Amino acid sequence: MSNRKQSKGLLVTFEGIDGCGKSTHLKLSREYLTSLGLKVVSLREPGSTPVAEKIRRILLDKCSSISDTAELLLYEAARAEIVGHEIEPLMASGHIVLCDRFYDSTTAYQGYGRGLDLRVIRKLHRLAVGECRPNLTLLFDVTLRVAASRLGQSRDRLESQPMAFHRRVRKGFLEIAARESRRVKVIDASRPVEVVFEDVRRYLKRRVAKL
Ligand SMILES: Nc1ncnc2c1ncn2[C@@H]1O[C@H](COP(=O)(O)OP(=O)(O)O)[C@@H](O)[C@H]1O
Ligand SMILES: [Mg+2]
Image (cartoon, rainbow, N blue to C red):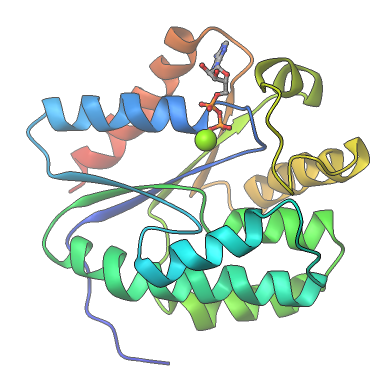
């Protein structure tokens, strides 16, 4: 494991099933934190570096059939790229990094969803991220019904999985939150955006106050 410096910035990750409101609240969070005079950058996973964006295209391609293990490794490969090339340097220069999905998504989708070994997955996270762990994770929880009603027609490879898969993924996210309740905050995202964002703002405010 590489010896990584203590970071000055913050890593805040946005998690939950598709349609839960991650992108909506990431944008609102960026605006809010910027208005406080903080240096904020938003990134998305998988992606945000040239190599990771290429991996993203493979992963989200409707037509490609990928084995579960290869899929897991591609997500971790993309993650190692974003951590080394983006997140760590940004945090070292005092930025607040907001990331649309991070390793909890892999635990939820590849672990709980596909049924791959959770212990192996946690070891791979460690290999990919080293000590670069989220300081705060906001889990936007909605039922599958609410999520589906918010999603449009366009379905990528993952979104077109059966309902049972998404049900396991949602349950997986909630189990992660129960295991790591200090880091992962569950937010009822079925309420109107402004009401949900009141919770988001409270968690962000509390966390940045400790900087
Ligand atoms: N609390 C909410 N109530 C109603 N609609 C919402 C809410 N949050 C998000 N949406 C809408 O649902 C859709 C999916 O939201 P989005 O933020 O893109 O979710 P995600 O990034 O998690 O897939 C968008 O059209 C968004 O405007
Ligand atoms: Mg989104």
